[in-house]
Image (cartoon, rainbow, N blue to C red):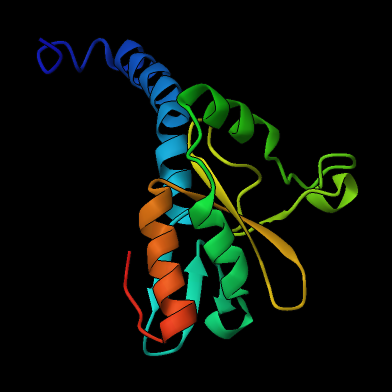
Length: 155
């Protein structure tokens, strides 16, 4: 039907397509953001923890903080949503993690996507870091193996 009316109704079809894209783009922004800013990799060849656009040396991660996070009780869904809403590190006055005394969000995003779990670890220098993850225990187990025994796993 659209192809039959193209020569006469090109304008309305372009408007409908533009409106569709205006609705589609915001719906796709969160999954794309998660893929860019919250992808976690533990690189065995370079001894690096890569989170989104940032990387940390595994030797800088404090193994005691990783083991402490493993021992914590898992959060309920409601607690996870509340924690993700409060975990913001946006580049605006009053919303930076450093201004609020909160851990720095690693990866390059401005906040933890709603409903994602976050893990707080420390560096050996004492800096608190927050890392958003889909699977808390899988990430913590791989990170504990990488920081304590020297073996590395990809997540």
